[in-house]
Image (cartoon, rainbow, N blue to C red; front, top):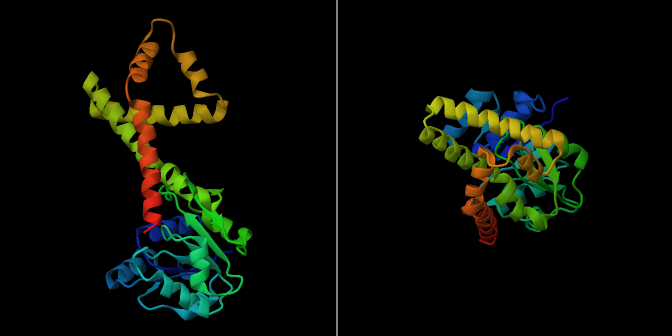
Length: 268
């Protein structure tokens, strides 16, 4: 059984979410309606996915939907969007991906008793099925309805709203840290004399394999490092250089800076 979804705001994140849900057959082309102010965007979404895409607010779609996904930008008039949804007294679950807008603000804008609101910070690995989305359930949200939809574009982590900035800076930005590590590592391989193709394929295989080993063995990284670092060998030598560098502090500072930026944006 597919879920009827009405999406307001057909930007890149909304598209990625719906594309993943479509791929995993949680929605169908016929069960999705999208409103976006851009005529170009509407035309694209129709042609690319067969969605019912329109420029005007669709009251019928909002009323009939199982889920209303609100994907407008924080600087857009999101309060007016939610006011119109609230006036319809729809029984749909309202899922917001608006950055920096709290559950309390969403519920106030809906001005509807027992509004079924969920706030999510979606992961950016939607097409792969990997990554965690941080999910904050409102008081009246139906977990059993929203969970299958959110799981269609990755794993779900139900969190208190107080953690949402930390989650944004650490989890949602997580791929950025990996991309930077991958880039630095592959450049090191080329610097050492490997071809770019060799460096890339070896780094990817090592990242995937090391992640699988951590998951399968449940061992602490220090245990695995100790196994690899034989006395006087290459492993312990590289470990000495990493320990003497700003590698760990640089990564930790990047995470804290991203968390601070999430807090700053949420306060605007």
